[in-house]
Amino acid sequence: MSEAVPVHGRSKNLVLAAMIFAVAMTFIDQTIVSIAVPEIQTKLGLSATGVQWAVNAYLLALASMFAFGGRLADTLGHRKMVTVGVIIFAGASAMCGATPKGSLAEAWLITFRALQGVGGALMFPAALAIVVQTYEVRERGKALATFFGISGALTAIGPIMGGFLTQWTWRAIFWVNLPVAAVALVLIVLAKPVTDFRPARMDYRGLALITGGIVLGVFGFQQAPLWGWSNPAIGICIAAGLVLLIVFYRVERKTDSPLIDMDIFKNRTFLVENLVLGISMLVFVPLFLFSSEYAQISLGKQAKDAGVFLLYFFIGFAIATQIGGRMLDRIGAKRPVTMGCALAAAGFFLWAQKVTTLDFGKQQWFIVLAGAGMGFMLSPASTDAVNQAGRYSYGEATGITQTIRNYAASLGLAVLGTTLVSRMRTNVANQLVTEEHVPRAAADKAAASLAQMQNSGSSGSGSSSSGTPDLSQIPHFYKVAFAQSTATIFYAMAGIMAVAAIVAFVGLKRGVAPEAVDAVESEEAAV
Image (cartoon, rainbow, N blue to C red):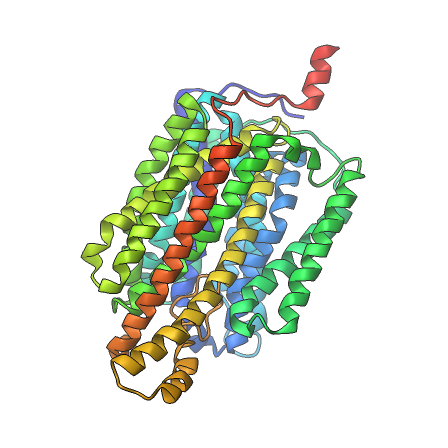
């Protein structure tokens, strides 16, 4: 077990910089690949199913392995797991960029995309745990605000970067991870972060149960917009996943060295913060998909320009993240988390009222407001949740929060994606009748196929351009119908964030939370 060593001044900042570079690849990868999906499919001759799995394999591996990654970090060492995760992610990225043409292409790309997800799941919990242990409790809000603020900005830059890199070669969207990984590894060597960890047996039975449960559940949610909720396979996958997760919970309660110590959920603050994060992620990740599609279809922007549209969201997000982190350090999490959820609800509500104008100038300040709300709540909620864990369990706590966030994001994409298609069917039919004077029966028939235009070939996981019609050929009635459908989605997002605000207001306590004390540490002190 490593002994904790105080870290001060520039060395703290060096550790923070090293961890930001380490996780930067995972945040960029969330959005950069989606821009290149059409190009990858064309150049490699992939089937629609194959290209869909090239996106989904990464997300499934990432979501299902977070808990395992967090546990490994706490038992084998956080610095070791960050380093291993960076190497795996970078190596898998290089192999993705080297995908050969021909019959091997599909299996090759899917395999190494999944390996990228494994690398990210090993890396992220360990990196966040290092930041948490490097800073004292009253400094963590500011530090993690920087961590999440920069990481969030990289998510927005992804589509812009992807658009330009794809003009050179689609392979560059994977190769761009290599210099980032190199910088991260150099900074890790220079910073030499030291954290506490405690060797323990690995619960492989728990790993199999939670991996199976999350993979089946997330897969069901991801496929729902494509296969339709009426397809029995969707219900079977989701139900089987839930059953496995219930079995996992019961097994973990009886396991001596569990993958996840379920007693952590007895901590009210940890439970509430994860509820808030789960509810918020129903909105946060799907927002990238739906706003990007709206920018392309209704506003007529190119894919790379749609990323600029999202930068307005991250202007508010980046500024508010810093303010929220400092508020957490001074007065605790309740006020910034509650206020952030409420501001996001107001931002999405006001934004929804302007999307049908098809005028970006009338929307931009409400986009900034929605981003500010998400920024206020995200960093304080995440930090406050991890603060509840003992110093030997920061990786585990991070793994739990990330698992919940990814599971909720998949649910949000599925439900909101289905809602969008359903509203499109109605709105397209209405537009055809009122604007194009098409008879109702013919309009309904045409709307059934037209409503799927923006979703054809989409993975439901952030791929916004693979099925988008030629921008120059999109008729005005379709742009208006899509804007009306997007407004419905944004109203739903406003309602979801209002629920998150209520949960935070009712469930969280006032004041700055004290640092949690590990049970073993308490026993040693007593002796």
